Image (tube, rainbow, N blue to C red):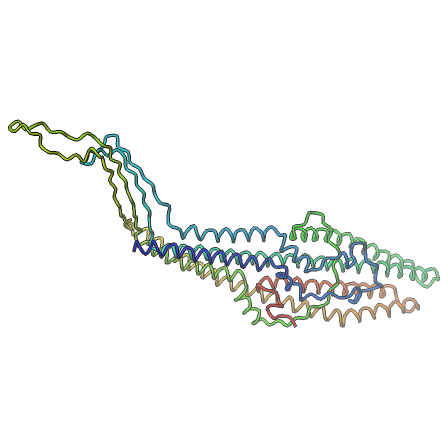
Length: 485
């Protein structure tokens, strides 16, 4: 057994060390590739400026919002994955856990011992004043192997924590980015409609000047114009807050300008619940982490059972012998001769010894308690995995329902409601100019057109925010999960 430990323990430790280092290094290298986050931006479809419906004539873009100065969603995702400090911290935790493997698979440190005697022990070889010894404990090889596998599973769990952190950062980027998209489109529409309202005010004033309309038509239009201005103040504050959130996620300095986002068309998706649930079972980092944890706990149970096996101790001792004068007996009184004596003590030859020991696993109650603890930990992980699976399935089903609903809403607004609202507004305005309609109908139709257009862009933005949550729950992008057509 002792000889087997001497040969097997170093080999087991080297193999597990290499496995842990390779797993962590491969994971980090894979995540650090530039295209690692591109898949999460593939489903978004930028469209040409002005190609989506909005009331009024398009306004000129503001300074800093031109496409040349604009960062795409992919740019922000890549920047966040490169700079986010939480991701860097998770990577270091994975490296830290990998460095734990060689520590637990190595043999315990040898023990160096000395013994100094105030009064020497007299032997035939001489006087023994000092003893120097060294001892090495040799656990059963399987103990080192199980401890190493527990540490290896900890490293693999840290890799899944790193992947979860990356997915959370990507989702945070997309949530903030498309919140800014909704705000930018709403601001643009409100500003465009300010120009439209000013045109209505001029038309109303012309009607009042001709005596065909009352002054309250002009006042009603001015109230609506002031209401738009107050909405713009709130929207600018919301954009500043959301931009600060985006800068935090990508680890940019506070106050870094966030250019206006581009325009996006409705995402084309082909999502099936069973496909997404199957992908989550294989790729969701929370579930994968718990599976690695369950494997770790299985090794932990076996390690606890190995406490019944004793550890062996091998040692070597060297005993220093101090020379002393040989004993000379007196002459024999009858013969007058001095009897012969051994003179070995004059040389003081040092002596040595090999020691062998074993610990006795005597306290059975302690060992059994450790086994019960390990079993309870394994069962707790099983229940935690079941609970996490139910939670992930709910998150996927909930996010999928919201994504499909927002996509359907966006399509209805774009293809049906907005064209009808625009036509109703144009007809009522023409009728008002001809003196055949009331100004209240014009304002009401204009408000509906404005509201429906804003709701269209909100549906597009919320669709993408729902996709971000769906991808975080599945554990991979929809393009990789086969959820895009």
